[in-house]
Image 1 (cartoon, one colour):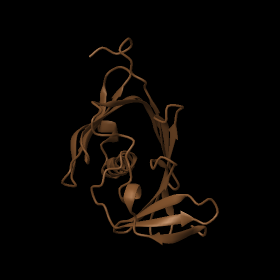
Image 2 (cartoon, rainbow, N blue to C red):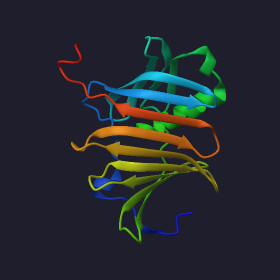
Image 3 (cartoon, one colour):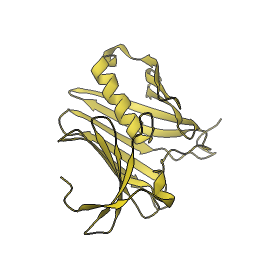
Image 4 (cartoon, rainbow, N blue to C red):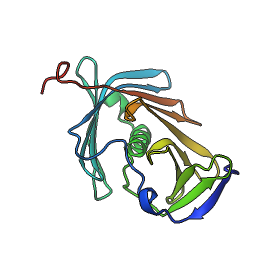
Amino acid sequence: MFNTLQKSGEPTGQNSNVVSWFQEGHRHYLLNTSITLYRNRFSGIMIIRPFGDNHFRVVFITEMGLKVFDMEFTETGNIIMHYCMESLNRKAVMKTLQNDIGLMINWRGNAGKLTELKDKKSGAIVIKQKQKNKSVFYFLNESGKTERMLQTGMITKKVNLLFYKNNQNTLDSIKISHYYLKLNIHLTAINETKSSVSE
């Protein structure tokens, strides 16, 4: 599956911990969000609030202000569902959304061993995180942040996440897609300014 990747050792220095695009110290992040699940489409704003290095609260509301879901990723490795809209409140759906959002914010709820790989063709650094029955590959850009994440099962690819940055080297948008499930998520960062947002 990854014929061009070779092991280069245990992660050291800046690669010892994959850097999240959602950093502690920011009050919150706002993203225009579209979730397509089979024939259903939900659109609105996702609010991500980091409380610590590995503690996040994620709320998704529609343009009309209706809450779709509200989940908290804790430092102890638990996910607390504060609310979920009835039409999405199915165990398999919520487990998949929690997995996708946890990957996106780089939540380390069940972090496993990290291995550093190197692409033989491009020389790019890739961090592999081994979990119970799956692995996550972090393809890093020149500043050490993730530009792509790929979650695999035992033998198949499962979820692909692409992170796009803007000219200021900050997050512009994210695309999340599944290989064997009709679920796609597209998020675009909202650039808050004092003139457009009042506290």
